[in-house]
Amino acid sequence: MKSLLICLILCATAVTALAQNRTLEQVRFDTARLLFENPDHRAVRFRYAKVSYHTGNYRAAKFHLLELMRTSKAADDLALLKRVHGTVVETAPLSFGLNLSILPSTNISRTSSNQIFDTLAGTFRIVGGGQEESGVGLRFGGRMSYETVLPNDGGTLTYSAALNRNQYPVDRLNSYDGTLSVTWGQHGLRGTTQITPYVFRNFYDQTGPQNADSTRIGVKASYEHYLTDKSSITGTIAVENRNYDGLDYLDGPLLSLGASYTAPVFDQSSLGFGILTTHSKPTRAHLQYTGISLWGEITTPVFGMGTLGLNASLGGRNYDGIFPALAEARQDRFASIGISFSSARIRVWDTIPKLSCQIEQNRSNVALYEYKSKDCALTFVQNF
Image (tube, rainbow, N blue to C red; front, side):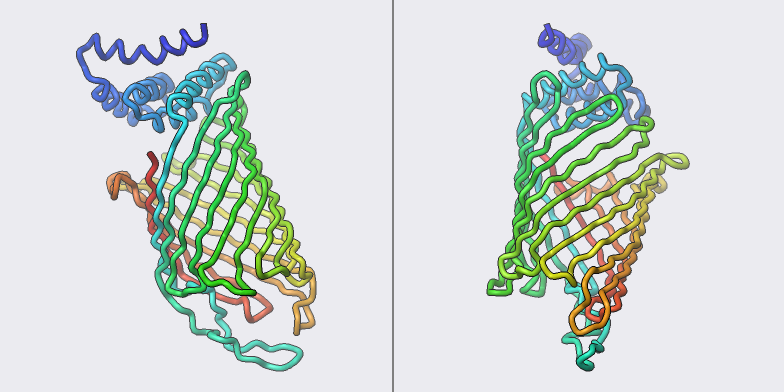
């Protein structure tokens, strides 16, 4: 009976289109225009999801069904949307993506801004200190996901794999990184829960007894609680264990807790802000720290040209043990401010590029770790 109901729903658009002697692509175009004019109209969004399914645009169908699930107010409505979403997932469980980021920076190695390091043993000159090296890095790679629907509760399991290359003018920064993960997701009337165990591996081109190759095994969990159709509070927790091939003193666990709030402001703008606390406990006491950071971002459309974003963050880290050659523990304070822009009118390789830039500064009582940098990123992401 359920399968028959889903079939009738998904076939309704096709029957209507044939009756009016119009192609499904025309229906999809017309519905997209209506959705743009009435983004809060659930029936129009549902129709667009259905016609996207029939035209083979499964990614769009999934996206809009998830949006409808987020704003569902009744258990029966949510259950129906889950069944329809499950049908789309079963039809197209595989998804792929490619990404490319161009990363210019005024200080690609995060070189210290200081030339001198005063210690209990005397004064030393910092190698390269005060001589920030600018350059352009590249990050590119791909990912693959396979999604399945769990029986009974309508939750999903998504198996993902990603591989990326990081290429910089400085050889010691060049590396590959790969991630394997499984995400369990569940949509409810009041919120969405996700739990993701993962394995991350980073390996550098330069090898040796002091290489920074590492493996991270962890799990992330988040819950987004819906306050209104467009505002929410999200809580996150992540626990991972880090193991370095050649830097054993960096081995150890890391715990982070975060909370964020997003909501519409003004006419069509959106505001988000949050807090993140982190506790890292590697082998060496002077590297163990507790940190906290605050961030905020506002995005707004600009003259129909695109979306402009403004963001800022500040925070600090307090380290536990006395720093070698000093009579005190390390303390860092950091801040950044940035801007971003993207426009649906600009398309490159069937992607919408996003440009973002930020100014970052880190102050520390340990001269080695004071730095400043201006960084930008031009990012392209293609999903298919």
